[in-house]
Length: 83
Image (tube, rainbow, N blue to C red; front, side, top):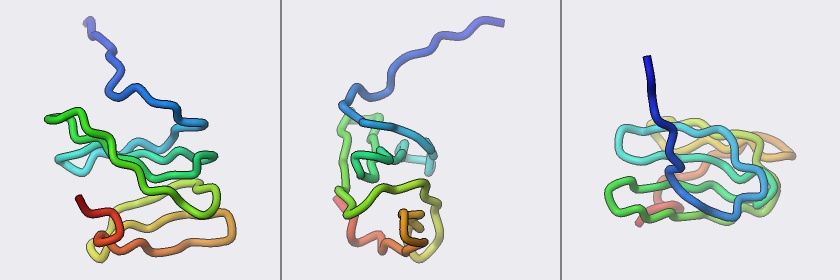
């Protein structure tokens, strides 16, 4: 079996981690950036939401994303990261 690995998005992440696919876009965190990022593979556009403190992880939920920030877990409404 053979496969080819390609870079999906070039960037200046300080510490990129936790890639998740939502069926349309690839999401990940830049822990020390700190930022939550997403890539639209159709256009190649990367969007970033700057965060106030380092982020450890995130997850999807129906009411919006959940962020694991240094002082605790916080909800992020989808409207904060639209567009």
